[in-house]
Length: 331
Image 1: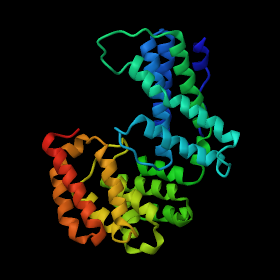
Image 2: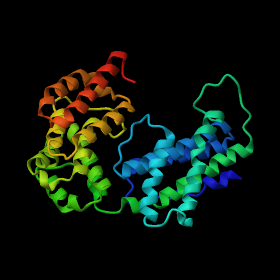
Image 3: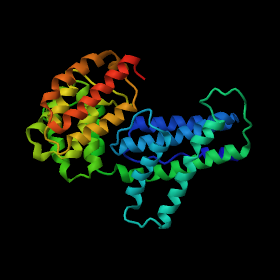
Image 4: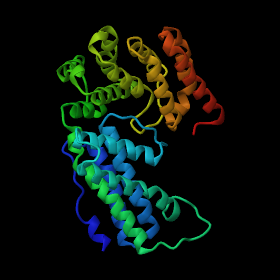
């Protein structure tokens, strides 16, 4: 009776943001409804989608930027590594506490193929028989990994970074507020993923034309380079060009200028921009960027001479990629 499996609430980490929990709950509820209706294709599809949703929430919570078109296996693997590192860091690879979660991930990784073969999301010319065994395998595979990941997400979220990131998404800042909180956070003492996550949040909020965040979180970074580590700078650059949904989004009067300011003091701007190019290439364009991309590209060309020499070619590559996609329409 797989219906019993979806009657128990999923574990929720204390610091998990409401919008992330709502997304997980929506997918979990859809899986339960599909089971209750005995809609077997929807059960298979919903099981895979629940795993992918939780994996993306893990990565967002960890400060990792992903494109909305990134492959399922890639997203699952990255999320598993994040939770595994936080939960069982220091254990040898052959320890049972590593082997059991790895087995759960292997089960979850098969859901993409099962969804492709049996689940919703594809218009097939034939109807495949979906046995009870297929349905049960999908539900068990999804929930074993999902419950393991969510039960340990609190370890990933521990620390004062979480409420600050939340406020950067939704809160109101007066002049000096963010500067004081960033100073109290002691960014250089944070782990690199947390530094990067903070940077992403600052970049995304700045791209939404919040002036005081731009002053306290970006201009201050350019004025006092020794206080701001590379991982934070990389996150800022990513946040200036990608929105919270993983879509390409940038503002002509903000993104290029601020990114260049931050990159001028980064130890490896070419690496940051090469990684950014890869993410932008796997992400769709937001409605805003579809309208503003000509002005953004123009601004990027104008800022090119201000970049360090090592960053100019990767920056040019990003411009060329955006122009190439614009000719065929955003995808």
